[in-house]
Length: 170
Image (cartoon, rainbow, N blue to C red):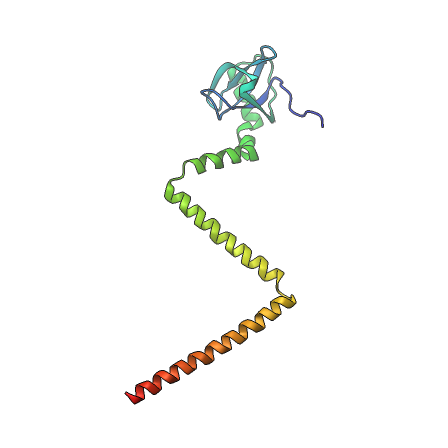
């Protein structure tokens, strides 16, 4: 499978390490085979040289010239709606979800776990209800349950009758 993301001027990158970790910026110039000049005017990343080992290439590209000014990059960034496109990616949503989970308190984690258990129980019961709807074992089980219910009703009536008889004697 051929490569689809290339190191090029205008390529949007995710900064993985360093003080600006977690932010996105655009490549303005390629310094050498190990470093690039970055700028992120809309994300608060100042113009700086970063190693490629600290960056992850995204699928987003904006049209800018090599070594462009911060102002022209901002205009191109906003014209291409890079921030909105980034927020719409599954990568961004996954990072956001991870940060949200990391910031949960103990009680909130407990509530999430209980909600998951309730959801899984509903899914499981619905699945088995659909799967076992017309099987012979399900029919046999229904007959067995009905017999047990009838037996327990009869047993309950007998218990009530005994209690009444004892109450009359006393």
